[in-house]
Amino acid sequence: MAGGPIFPFSAVPDTSGETFPSVHSANSRYEEGLGLAASISVDRIWHLRFALPPKLPSGTGKLVVVSMANAVTGTVVLEPQWASIDPNGENAFTATLNLEGDTTITWSTGDADKYKEAKFALDADTLVAGEIVTMSLKFDATSTLAVTSTHQASIIWE
Image 1: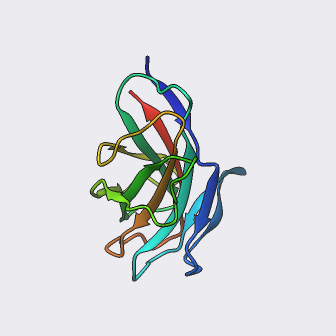
Image 2 (image 1 turned 90 degrees about the horizontal axis):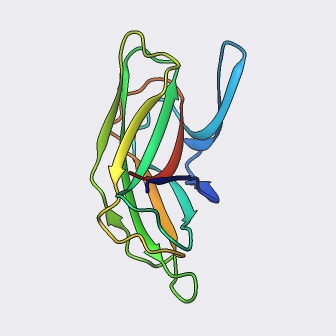
Image 3 (image 1 turned 30 degrees about the vertical axis):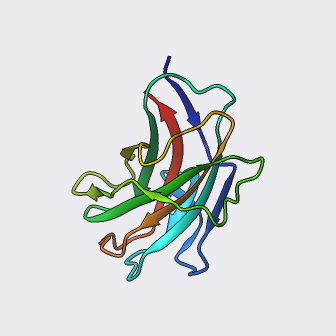
């Protein structure tokens, strides 16, 4: 049986000031998420933690990132790195994070304020029931989006 979503219990921006808690607004409606400044010139990171359930659903564990921006052109390049950590003894702050590769989210005419979704199969490490996923969600400097964007991350199984 597929399952999720599981949202991060901790989401901490890097210290650059170009990652920040964000509220995306359009047509007097609002949605909070992980903010990213416009036109970043170096990589930026959100540090995330997800608590896995005591029994994992069947299927493939995937990171889902839903993004939104008031944009009609540009890209955001995402590159998650993560590890599953035993909370009874492993150190999340010194763990080696495994790279899942990158994907590009593209905005074009008609995409302003619409949801854009990216999925990553979490197979660079092993998801373990009851453990904590420690993740660095990197926004690559090759991103070209010239406006602030807002993102939400979750883990699902499908």
